[in-house]
Amino acid sequence: MKLIDGVSAHALRLIPDERGRLMEIMRSDWPFFKKLGQVYMTTNYPGIVKAWHYHKKQTDHVACVKGMIKLVLYDGRENSPTKNEVNEFFIGEHNPKLVVIPVGVLHGWKCISETESIVINCPDEVYNYEHPDEFRVAYDDPDIPYNWDVVFR
Image (cartoon, rainbow, N blue to C red; front, side, top):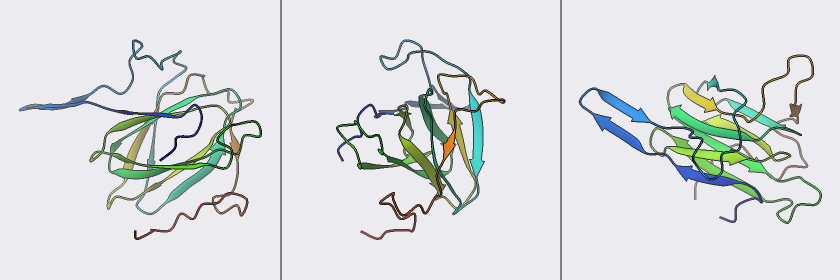
């Protein structure tokens, strides 16, 4: 898969022992780290799609720590060398990854596990309640070449 310009995906190391598991999600000494605005958790019920949205100032750093999600990115940025590209990432407890989503890239996800998914985001900006840096597009917008249905390959 050709990655959208500015997108990166990083395998997360899961360290199990007899007490449980530890997984680092974000470190300030990783090469792609710029700054941390906040950390938040969101969930999805099985089969639910949360899409599409993008940010004009914020870079997202998304990891799924429980269940599995299909994280989809669409590059609708006018001057991008990867304009109209789509990236799909299947991430979660069976494939722990951190995906960096740059400013302007539309993104969303669908819970594809049989149980609720738990997603952690570490954006580089603090959420502004009065002027949110969040711009929404319908999940089934005909201008985005993506179908959220299950695809058998």
